[in-house]
Length: 157
Ligand SMILES: [Zn+2]
Image (cartoon, rainbow, N blue to C red; front, side):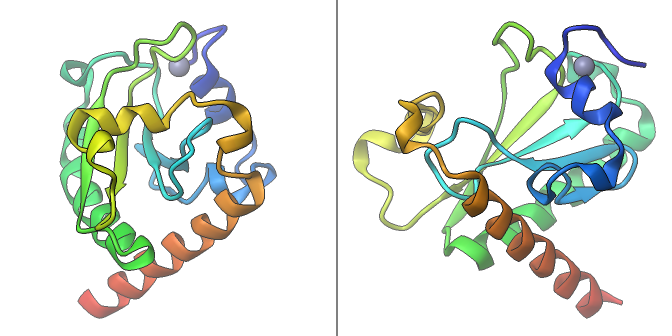
């Protein structure tokens, strides 16, 4: 199910391996994990539903069951990769063309400035383009997050 004009649907429809790694850090068929675009905070991830839905109440049982463990693992991976104390989890999907369900998972770093704490962390999105995390840096972080996820998976096997 895709929705014309939807940014996430367009990328969901792309052939997986054609996407840069920052757009496919993880994909279990329910959720695709990506590095957030237009973020000036390295390691800001988004968990994008594979289907075009716009509210959590539309999740299938399988999507809902996969989400909790995935959020735990992503938080763990981001803490290892970025040194975050914890991760913030947010869902808004208010920007035109970005209504597709995507959940923000953002690292709360130990040296996070006072004026960025809590809900103010969102100020890291949509800053002037010269502050954005570069595509190369997003790809490097994606590789490190993916490695952390696979190391964690091995330990629990
Ligand atoms: Zn969509």
